[in-house]
Image 1 (cartoon, one colour):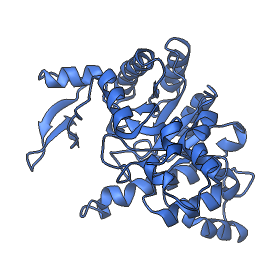
Image 2 (cartoon, rainbow, N blue to C red):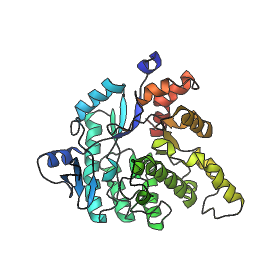
Image 3 (cartoon, helix red, strand yellow):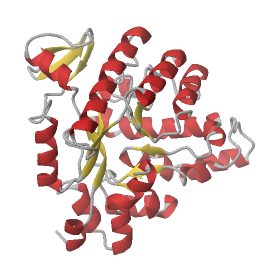
Image 4 (cartoon, one colour):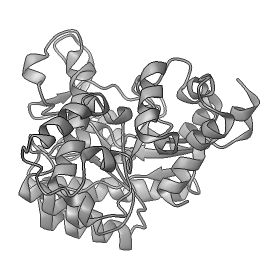
Length: 341
């Protein structure tokens, strides 16, 4: 590990955190907002809510934020991390009232985690995007009463994209808060899942595809034109969209529907931020060529196994096409600007 990694801060913008109350309830044999412990057909421990099953075991630090922060510093020298609930806890498949109640409890825990760690862990708020009015209420409560300073959202809402009129209203209420928003692929209702039952394609293909559709739906919806100071970041390098952008702009040149956007998609993509989880140096170099090193953030997917082998920060540090200054930017300066720390 080089001195540049040792001597600087590292801000992880993509990590996951189990709500402490959920961990406690499930480990004691109870339930939390309808979620219970169960087992998959292969006998693997899972959490389930009715027919919705997510095969995730609790990580060894679940529910202990102090131990987690200690281990994060030890394992990858992560000085600050953004805490995002596991992607199956967006609650978009739940009734709006039930989802709002779960979001309220998650937001309380996220605010508490931020306080307990003196801001070295920053809890990301969540909202019930399936209902615009409940989203407005939760944004107001989370910001004014809890002090939430950033939010995380899924890439789609019960199979609806970001240009859906009701989802668009919810996003407007969220963007009105003028706070950073991170987009992460949903777990349930992933696009193309029915075609991808084998080989873990439901993750390998669908998650980047979800992110791509989310970004383009948002751009074509016109919302980035309304919110010109929008601070938006996406997980997994923004998905596939950067590599197919030419086809979109070719069709627009032919006069096809451009929705409500005023500029070309490439101009909006340069405004957004992207974590580094693309797992390939050539892909990372191309992403930086398209959007600039100033838009790249550290992401680890901790503790769910999506990190780059050897650690994302170490991987960035090994990139010979990056200058030392660009590496420092990716380690923490870009995130500092995105979060206004």
